[in-house]
Image 1 (spheres, rainbow, N blue to C red):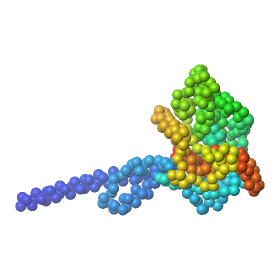
Image 2: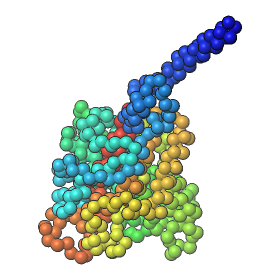
Image 3: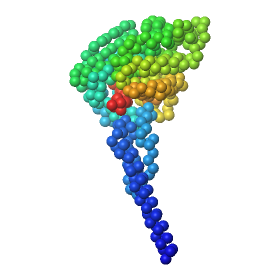
Image 4: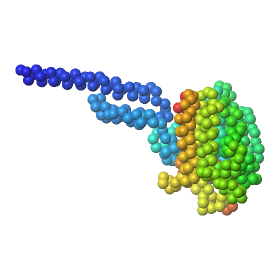
Length: 430
């Protein structure tokens, strides 16, 4: 009799603990799902796989929740180019837009239009094409600024041209010198009231020499001189895209605090090479730039720092050979590696943006990295190449010696994928 009562008590005790565990664990496991369903932003990894796992295991034995798989933002820089047969033609007609004529590859007669049909597919998520109407609505009443070298201008002009398919902008300011397009501002009228500007600043800090006059061969860079035109407007920029890097490997003398800090690739100057080379200079400039933006920004701001997009001058040929960048399709996976110099510049952006985000500690300032280095390195087919003038060659064979552009991107072309990612960042910032 005693054994029977003991067994019954033991059974009752176990049942009680099962109820306690069930009542305790179910809410704990349910709360993360409720959070994901209600609050997870669209640029984050989908929760579909997590729900499918729950269904596969049944309601009695739910699997452990793994937050990193749920809340980690998609790495848009990791992926591959896939052929998209659904593409019917160019996203927009660049002939109707104000952009550098060398980038109008369709108008200029680039014969291989396959470069229009490749779509970037990130490894961990999907990347939808930018919707111009949605983009303008998300930016209504705001100022988007592209600051840096000609790759920043290239991206801005492609974006403005695409947006103009739903609203025609007015060119509010146009400041051109020998280099052209030093400062442009487009204004999309009501109901959008969106301003998009480009600021020519290839070193982000003040520089004299080749960056101001192509007739010169060297630059003098003042590392502590944040006096470029963009610096006066930084507080009024709601979204700032920084894209610079291609000018830093050029021969230069560097000044800091009024004295020569060193040189790079200047054997004609009796000065010490600057510590860390041009990569060290790039890091110092990027750190000071992001610090300045943080200090001078009073309101909400999204700061997007783009990594370098490699050029594709084929080393087997001279820069002005017709085959300098004539490849008609992307590189396949594993066919090419990012050059060490460009990998180092990319590393600087990733590290300095992360450090700036930690050090800022100011609500309203958000930093993102637009990591385009790998995706761009795989697209030698996306440059204008020899087709840099309207109706170039008129169907005739390309001469062996010809001017080439293997740095900038056809618009439309791969550069539109950069703006697809930018759209996701804008959307996530609210």
